[in-house]
Amino acid sequence: MVSSSSIINTAAVLHGAGDLRIQQRTPQPPQPGHAQVKVMSTTLCGSDLHYFAHGRNGTFQLQHPMCLGHESSGVVTAVGEGVTSLRPGMRVAIECGIPCNDTSTCARCAEGRYNLCPSLRFCSSAKTHPHLDGTLQTLMNHPASLLHPLPSNISFDQGALAEPLGVIIHAARRAESALKPGARVLVFGAGAVGLLACMLARAQGASSVVCVDVNEDRLQFAKAQGFVGITFNAATQGPPRQSMDPNATPAEITLATMDRAKNGADRILTSAGMKPGEDGFDVVFECTGAEPCIQTAVYATRLGGKVMLVGMGTPNVMLPLSAAACREVDLLGVFRYANTYPAALALLGSGALDGVEKMITHRFPLSESKRAFDVMKKGVDEDGRLVVKVCIDGEP
Image (tube, rainbow, N blue to C red; front, side, top):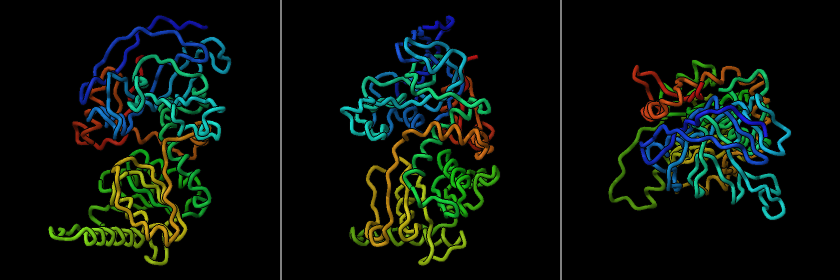
């Protein structure tokens, strides 16, 4: 093994909702097959924020202190026994999902869908116990096979963004032939993942990309940075909310909800220059997880089109299944990614996503991680500026 220099390992450790502490740890040498990485850039994700704000992410409850962060890149400082693909000094992107890789017993790993491996452990996720620490630390040890060398023209920030970009690449692959040159694409959500969906669709030759959100500042940011050309504010351009009769039956509530979703879809289509009832989007990337957006997505999709369920939100959703079935609209789930890092890094290095790092609107040192999460939670900084993506810089 090649030894790293003596460095104190500083870590941002979550102890409970809102209780993020900066702690000092003793770094350990990498095990065989692993490498040690000095983390240089970590962009914060919505799941990180859920853990910080609530001590949980969906059904995954924090059970003991855990280091957050999983969108990261860094520099190899040491390698364990048997590692020949990496050497100290190499710049790498860190793929944080660790599957079992036992292709003799795990059907999902055998078919290359290791993101669905039942034994997969993910850095900064409380799904498994004990939890696996994330990347908001000075040094971390990680399987060498999941450390991807960065092209020379890619920054550490771009290397960190390869993680959320991988989610959208995975979704685009699942969309298959529906996402091709000339396709019409609708994206729900102007957060980081939604913006990446807009950029990827344009890079793959989509003829029209429309982004929907309820936050006008986010939509204006997306336009100003050139991430998308057409935006739709569902809060101001969508159908007005109507109070529901408290004596309405479940069937009446369902009918009213679906009528509103269809009306919203028609308005989006009209704003994009399409004819409701005749046209529709080839692919819809639903990146919010919000029930009304999922419902509207079904009606906004063309006959035989695809809705990609990227966002993780409402656990149980009322859906217009008859409309989806009769129009052969495919609703496809998307869970993280598999085998996307090489494609993501190649795409970032090609310049096809020029300006992607502009999504990073705020950055903080590791020692101010709690302040970074507080700003992210608020959505605007002390000066009232919009927060889109927050980056935590590694210790110098």
